[in-house]
Length: 110
Length: 114
Image (cartoon, rainbow over all chains, first blue to last red; front, side, top):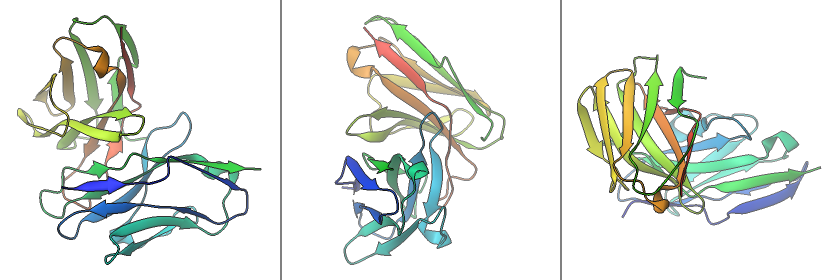
């Protein structure tokens, strides 16, 4: 079964500390992988996607095919990073059915 | 924000009543989606549309129906609302529907079924 697992419901770190939000997936094939973010009182929006190999707001995500993981990392967390983060996958075929994880709420303390 | 609006933004209704939520887009995107967001479950796909009059079921479609008579509007109907359908509902759009396509989300509708 296709599934995205985010093991941490809540992650709390101090400002300036490194942060890693974990994401593991179950999928028989090579999916496209995304991280979406929802800041307080804002819409859910794309943070980054694997295919772009991009770094947005200092965040990067590495796809480990062997471990079927797509963890999101940032070396120095900022207070404005506090938000709800969702990992998602989209099958490379029939890709219009994106599957989301349950989300991790990141809280960055001053 | 992409041109996506949802109405109403908040609604309280009673068990057994019909409810219709509307998603309107001005981007002329082909694909439209309805999700529900619940604690511990994240976003789950209810129904989606890949064109006018073309819709299909998602992961949690029981108790919901949809219609898309125009490119810009995607309606979600709860024929007889139940308390388990209390949730936040998000509409999303995508241009092409391919796997790498970004989804753009509406502001959400908070529905409470008493």
